[in-house]
Amino acid sequence: MYAVSFYEVNAENFSRVREVYPRHRAYLDEFALGGEVVMIGTFADPAKDGSMAIFRSRAAAERFRADDPFVLEGLVGASRILDWDPLEFRAV
Image (tube, rainbow, N blue to C red; front, top):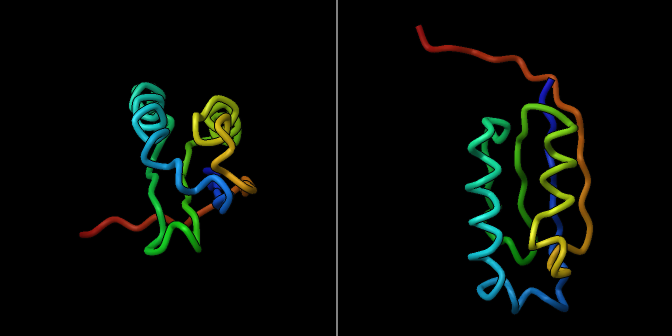
């Protein structure tokens, strides 16, 4: 089972994204070395729709969120983690 983490933007602090992004990216790159991040990214309009990430477990999603600079610096207004049990298809 995977876990999907959704971030909503804190509009009051969105202007700080460029300032905090290098620390968020460094944290993500280090965290991803453990193999627990499947995918991560923003929606087409991140200021309006936020972002999401897919992790290999809920525990990994919770650990990531706990120390993510975007969260610690107040750029995330709300977040939630949902367990996800997808069907997987492979091309023949």
